[in-house]
Amino acid sequence: MADCIFCKIVAKEIPAQILYEDKDVISFRDINPMAPVHLLIIPKQHYQDLNTAAPADECLLGHILAVAQKLAVEQGIAESGYRVVANNGLNAGQIVDHLHFHLIGGHLLPDFA
Ligand code: 5GP
Ligand code: ZN
Image (cartoon, rainbow, N blue to C red):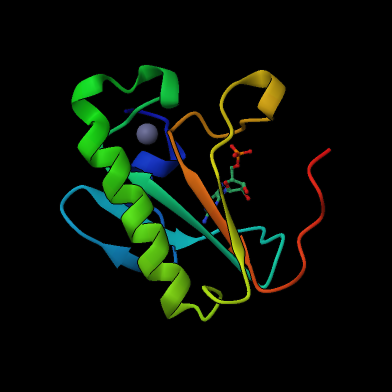
């Protein structure tokens, strides 16, 4: 989608520290990390948020969680603990309108408000 920063990362039009990529999914480091490990895992196809995913996308959504698990192991945070978070819409503070899952860990994370 035009003017979507994450679509531009998918298209390699802007740089990112990519840690994982397959035909459907890409993962890269968050530009403003809130923890020692802070990755974003996104579908390559543009979805605004989870609301725009359909039942036919269940396999893709499950695959994203499997990629999160694999990256947590690779990043050494699987045993110490980590969070997988998708912000959806205004009240959740979603800033980038391309569905993404944060993988966050590496230190004790604050309680949710
Ligand atoms: P949201 O609040 O939408 O869930 O979070 C968007 C995340 O994307 C933020 O943590 C922000 O730091 C990250 N981000 C925004 N722009 C870029 C970018 O150009 N490159 C990378 N790697 N991360 C970005
Ligand atoms: Zn996009």
